[in-house]
Image 1 (tube, rainbow over the protein chains, first blue to last red):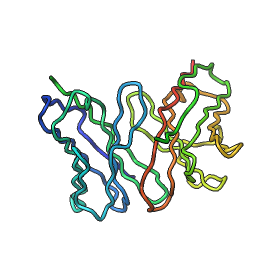
Image 2 (cartoon, one colour):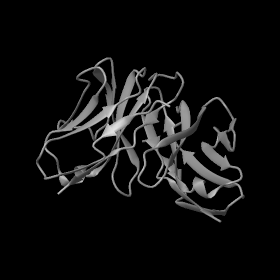
Image 3 (cartoon, one colour):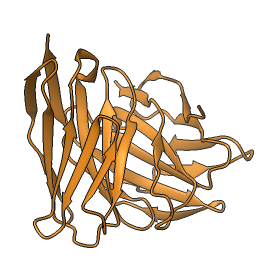
Length: 110
Length: 116
């Protein structure tokens, strides 16, 4: 079945760039998503990319998609302490049945 | 900004009891979903709902689960007879489209269910 994998943990210093990586297995994915979850909160849609795109930039966020390698990354420029959270990668097909990764906990040190 | 709202935020129940989790999707959205996240595990798809019927459901969504849109605004998930393993955070989500439209899928803050 479909699977999405992420590393568990990433620690960066405030002001540095963060890069969170994700791999997925379903080649029929239509959209790939990044969600942010702060402690005790829900899943906040950060950004998403259509599967025929290579890159999408949205302010401090850059998403790169390598469809051949089924690799997705999220780069956060000028990472702030408020960016500390769990970041979930998800892949979706028509019907919006998303398959989520296990989440990467980003810790930003001042 | 429009958002998906869920109630209750936390419910504690005894095993075997019925539970109803409620959601108010974003008002102009047409597709509704329930996902769940067992503590320490991945977020998992349960069911999608469109035009007053289930579109897709996962293996998790067995006969003890049901969904309903009783009044055109609320979207509910009922667990008929709760088991210990139903303890999880349940997320409602809504989308303006279910196909390859905008791709936007918005989640609520979740309802934490604890079954004792």
